[in-house]
Image (cartoon, rainbow, N blue to C red; front, side, top):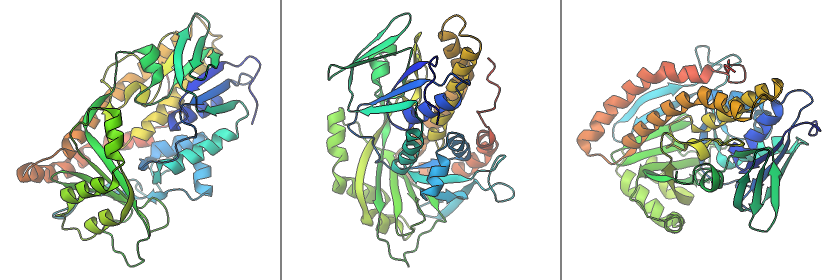
Amino acid sequence: MAPASPDGLNIIILGGGIAGLTTALALTKFAPAGKVPNIQIFEIRPTPATIGGAVNLTPNALRLLDHLGALSIMKEREFGRTIDFLEVFDVYSGKLAESDFSGADGKGIGDPPYKALRITRGDALKAVLAAVEKQENITMTCGKRTTTIEETADKVTLTFEDGGSASGELLMGCDGIHSATRLKHVEPERKAVYSGVSNAFGFAKGLPKDFQVHFECTAINFARRGMLLTSYFSNDTSQVYVGGLMQVEDIGSRDGWKSVGADADKTRANLLDRFGDAKIPCIVPLIEKAEDFYLWPVFTLSKQGKWSTDRVMLLGDAAHAMPPQGESTGIVFEDTVLFSRCLTRWIEKGRPNSMKEAFEAYEKLRRKRIEDAFEESKDVVRTVSDAGWVGHTIKTYVVPWFLWWTRANREKHFIEDVTTVDIGY
């Protein structure tokens, strides 16, 4: 791929996770001809974090990964498992509903059509990393902890804990919920707040060939005290992802969460306590067989908030972290592409006024979508919170109705291609 252009922007990205990497790819892909940016990514971890649970990449997410050159790598390496439909169960009575990704003709949703893909966070990141490594204009340095961020009229300078520094014309804060970019510069008072729910996840491996599951690929299983996701995440049916989203009392500190989260046996016991009375036969054995259990608290940011300064922009969880609502990863990809297109338009216009003009165009385009998703995420928290038998019974009636009622809106997002949508700028 082409190296950075002499007159391309010098861009710094904080965060070497999937948000930062896809931002680098999008800024490269949508750059004007002859103005490929020079992009430096700095990651706080010593190596990219290719661990984590499994996510559902919806059709719109796959469409964008295809545009950015990562989907073909996922296919080549046989990462993930295609989802035709997601099944919803009550663990006490059976199947409640389905959410379809196969479309009217069974080929997928949109033009060209895409289905969905259940994939581990680690494999998704590996594919995006491989796409980044093909770009000569992008470099990534790990093990860099930012201590200060200074912004002037013409540049942004980062100082690192090891005494080094880096400067650029634009800083992208893609460094997650506990973003140093936000907390040290953009909006220090806007701190992460625990949502009241946590995700306990692990992987049941080495399942015998005759092990019977109740789902085709992915199942959401509602109980009185939480929701359990059971899913294949590759073509190897001897492995099943097991993830419980449930109400957990606040531990009070990040160190406390790390300590509790690392106790796999305690996490498994908690899940068995919550889902052990399930009537679906495979639920308990899957929890019992699952390995590498980890408890991950879900933090959020307030609905409103500051996303940018004159030369710094927050994307993804750094700007608008929310509880998982089925499209979270796709929303991050949309952020990166839409922002890149707004920045490109500003460059094509000859860089009029300040870079803030491109920032304001992006925020005007994006705020409504994020606020709607935030409201949807609050429904998820309510749905997985502890409930008595009456509350749970009501839930089993409401969930199928809710999926039917919101189907058109979901499919509208699945079909949308933000690489071509009018950005109004």
